[in-house]
Length: 586
Ligand code: GLY
Image 1 (cartoon, protein in one colour):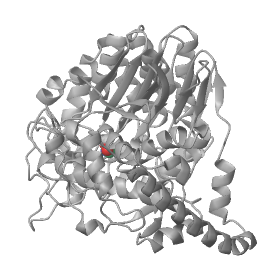
Image 2 (cartoon, rainbow, N blue to C red):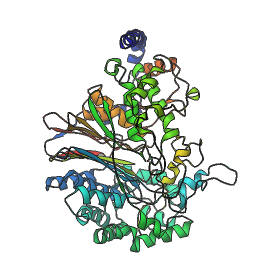
Image 3 (tube, protein in one colour):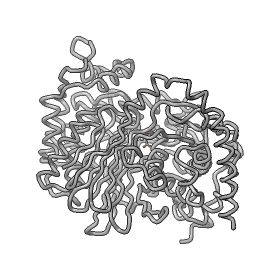
Image 4 (cartoon, helix red, strand yellow):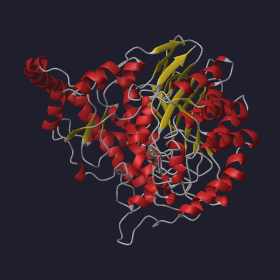
């Protein structure tokens, strides 16, 4: 009965929407799309890349090429993933980078198993709760975002090596070969690369070590079409190839990192590096309209909240309310804001705190949250507090997706936090340090760089992993890998990944269209729905009439995704929001 009354209510709302939309139609017909809208339309590739034997989708075509070669030569998805990750550290140093950390989900159909590798950075032993509180008692953003202290102990090298050792078939040295070649022989600079450096120039210029890498010896800027060489990085990668993880966490590279810390007042010591260990974790598992959703467990909040939001939305007829309609966006925003409110209270590193995962992802808790949603009015975020999932507790960054012909799928998201991280290159080692310490809550209640509020659960503690939103996700259908997805984008990672899932499952878009479609985002605070270019003005007006503040933002996320058809055909969808994105299969 309840479902029926919801349905009739939605029917009336939809009719009102249609009438209003029709009155706007003539006006819209007369208006030409803006240049920005036109660019989205032109970039909106709607046809996925198709293949039978293997598919690689990454944010850089050179990394895609190298990973595809590994698959073609008989390697599995993990071999290709580790190869891609190191290649991206060279071709896209501002985000995929050995100075950072991340998460990898691996699904093996043969083993009927999905595992998560957590190689998130850790707080150094010398870190303390109030290390970013300034003399005035406020959180010091410069310190938490752009200083040597902003760097956590990097996890990428250890995590990628562990993935290869446990689930791969090639050696670490082999996986590093393309990256070493690309660093040593260089690659042709695409416009996105040189534009990015220009935008970050002020901060990069502050450090001699960063100037040396990202600018020419005479101080001038690199131009598109020129060759970019990274000799120091090549030597660092060769040490890993020769000595394994010890080639990074001990010896010369460790000495260079510690010397950099000492020069800039950072905290990472030889002991911190030597003691860094990645962890194998059980992914968060949920079910949405019959599909099995696997996504990243804490210390990421991604999996918990994707499943939580999907659980809430499962009770609404989303296919019927339609893709990016005002009614659908309203319901999504209401579910999103409740999840992000809970994130602020409950999420953190489970090695240190108890996270009520069962409660957050339970259908009963979702029912409670769904019942509190008014179908036609926005809930003011100021009146919304984190819920209480405990009674149900019964017992963004670079993303890539890879599928092989052996039934394995890899979904990997890794990052150094901001574009260019702390903007500090380790002198002599050639890679940027992350500024992931800003993902802790420097002061409970004070937003981080993404406007995310954190609490006690995510306070800084020595050796703790900072809370993340990274959401590498694999969806299975009747036991078979079905969708491999994820995204960069800081706080927008969760909602970007969610929308790719919904675009496929609820709206039946092909994977390229699902990735390209305009996205929306709500994160509780600030109390606003962020929308990309491409959401229609009449939809915006209807949302505003429901009480939402709607703010147009630049592109959100960059999802590189793969869909596996029921006959085994692989479909790749590369995100046009990154001009270097590429999907290739064979
Ligand atoms: N640094 C962004 C995240 O991990 O969510």
